[in-house]
Image (cartoon, rainbow, N blue to C red; front, side, top):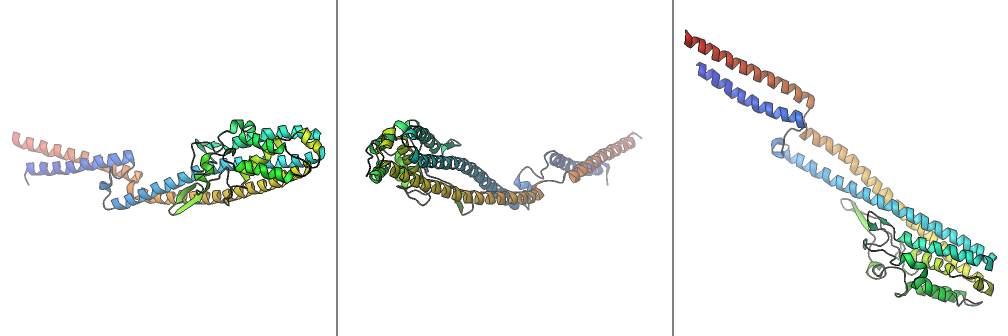
Length: 346
């Protein structure tokens, strides 16, 4: 073989070694076998499928995390509302025996509780109202700030003012009518109309699996509107806020009225407990699904790493070998060139 042929062969080898050096240098730098799926043949399709599955699992896990945060905030509100119902029920029971001396204090406590309960029903999480159904941008209790002096409270106070020895049941029925009247209901028009039959908000937490986490301010979990815990809670608080010493002195209707409020508050407390239990079940399901997605992602990322990522130790060793081979090839080229020049100078 001629000197030029030898040098040409060495040049071809060097070009291949330089390409290999560039590839190996990049792999050591990035930890990836290739810059694009095309460089992963014949496992490019598997890498694409694995990445797609990882992305889906990440989206589901993130959705579950957000839903769990919303559910936790909802549980906190439900717990506080239950405490309000329980406390005021106890106070109403005590007021039966206190008579006029306890009426004013009970009314003041109930008025503050009414304002707090309305504000709690307008709680937002992540910028969205928790108890407004799909109408997440508008408050479910529009006039919460002034509810103690609003149309509902005023109408209920007017009904309570008619209390006498024989009409406690009628008074309570009249206050229930106030809550269901479009002109005096404290709840939003959306909740009372188109939102009255919509399904609770739910999150897509897996393929084909939706978990309901929505709670309505004016509806119980069984879909009841007229006797829902939210409606009854606000009604009873407004009734208690309307009490006066004069009504207590009237006598005959005082105890039946407070008995009716106490019984209704017991149903409110039970309704809130049921909401908490159902939501707790949803939280457990969401947590299990989220953990399953995260566990799957660990496996999927391991599989994806086997397809896309290099063994850094092996790649570093190969890089050293390629550098050594390329340097040796350059030395060989120089040696052949020097021999050829020496032959020409003889």
